[in-house]
Amino acid sequence: MIQTMVKHAKKHPGLIPQFVFLALGVSSATFYLIRLARGPHVTLWNKKNNPEPWNQLDPTYQYKFVAVNTDYKNLKKEGPDF
Image (cartoon, rainbow, N blue to C red; front, side, top):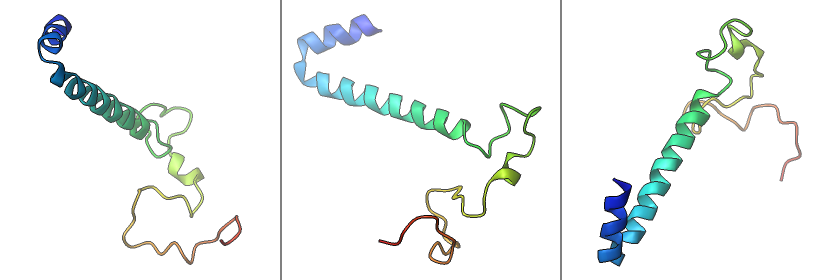
C-alpha cells in the first residue's frame, strides 16, 4: 500500500500534501485517544491499585474541555488573578 502511495505521489506531485495531512490527522486522532484513555478518571487500566480515582481529585478539576453548567469564576483558585 505504501508503494502504491509512493508511485502515485511520483506521478502526481499534487497528492503529496494530501498524504501529509492524512498522516497528520491519523496521528493526531491516535494521540488524542491515547490521551483520553490515560486520564485520571478512567479505571480501565488499573483497577487493583486505584479502583476509584475520581475520589482523589480536587473539586476544581475540570473533567471536560467545556462544562456548560459549571461556573468557574466562583471556584477556588491557587494562582493570582490577571
